[in-house]
Image (tube, rainbow, N blue to C red; front, side, top):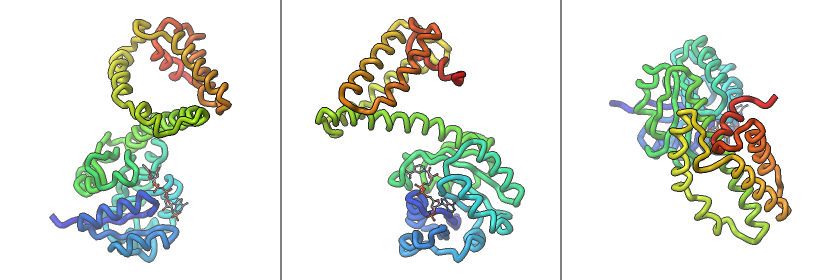
Length: 289
Ligand code: NDP
């Protein structure tokens, strides 16, 4: 089958990597970016520079958006909304599930179909089938463009509700940012004692041990069971206190361990001291009054 032309709107690091992935696979790629100069590099590689947003939309049915957020999409497409009819918008910009649902209705109002996406890889993973992107929106639209979308990364279709891809993406980001922040905090503590990031690396990257913890506790969590047979929240609380005290003694910022200790203490105060630390899920389920 003939390769579908692709329009890419937004040429940050992600949009540029996506443009290269399609060019490498022989697609005709039309690009548009607010700051026009950012297109120079991909145009030199073979992409077509659209003179305006309407031209970018006219170049083909499939329009991929790679922008900071959904506000950027409206800022770009609203002035050219007459050119949206018949297009398939695939928004790979991150935002909330609610924003994606609104956008699907907005697109339908202009005669366009809409898929939301959440990309789970940095620019270096674009073009790699082992990387993944969540998609949501009408299944027939996803199916019609699946092969073309697979040029970017593997696809993980989550369902017809357009909010589902952003929801799964935000669940992932919730883990990602807290994990990355805790890593940096630990490196600040290590650095205060002359220990380099390199020296911490084998322990930081101990994914096997993390996976064993997750695999052990996941069925218990889905069963609503938090027995204190292998760990107790009181033990976890004392352990977090030790982290906080070690941090304080090193003269390192204590905001993260203090926040963590606050959560652990709320769990103990709620009567979970003899349960596993996984009982903190009950603390997280309700927003603090
Ligand atoms: P950038 O923030 O670098 O790219 C932003 C793009 O949005 C640029 O093209 C910028 O235009 C445009 N933009 C922002 N605001 C406006 C506006 N008001 N009007 C018009 N254009 C606007 O993002 P990335 O390329 O890094 O990422 C794109 C998306 O992919 C983001 O949603 C991000 O969360 C997600 N993502 C990024 C990853 C990464 O590692 N970078 C990994 C996974 C997902 P201009 O050039 O004119 O400023």
